[in-house]
Length: 257
Image (cartoon, rainbow, N blue to C red; front, side, top):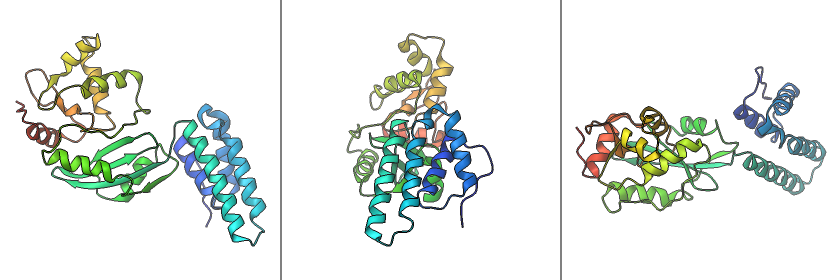
């Protein structure tokens, strides 16, 4: 059964359409919508010629019977497209999960490092859909993420206070990147207010903007945005919820109001 899309495409649905086309399961209408999206999107336009060449490769090998040759051609086509997606900032993502003392935590890893930490997701399929919003390929790979699971286990067991895994923050704005770097520097067991962090930025009136940036932290705990609290020591918001934030601060020995 072929895939049919009837609405205008986003970059995410464009990536899905391309992936579907590569297994020969996209109809002409879907490919037409993808071509139209590529013409109007500066990010995706650069890889559309490679998509067309890959589809031509599929058509060319369709009549062959040499299975190994066909697989080799498809592998080469997918690899070229993977490089193209990486060039426009949409690299493949591998993921895994770990049951922590604060609930199930899912991790996403790109070619550059940890790019996502998410609380509150129960099923692989739900997390896969989340990552598919920004990645052309998503697959579970527990072996590749074994190190990050080990580091999280050590953190929750009190055996380590820092993380060595590299992070990939390509998806955040320059302002958010500055906020996250300052949050990353807050020591274990301590906390700073949103206003104090804004002053460190040199923008003393940007406390609300600081809070918004921390609310979009893609890798909480590794970048410890839970150490940023309201003036007076009250918790404030957190991507994983107030209970998780309090549990993390309690683990580190900081007692919030």
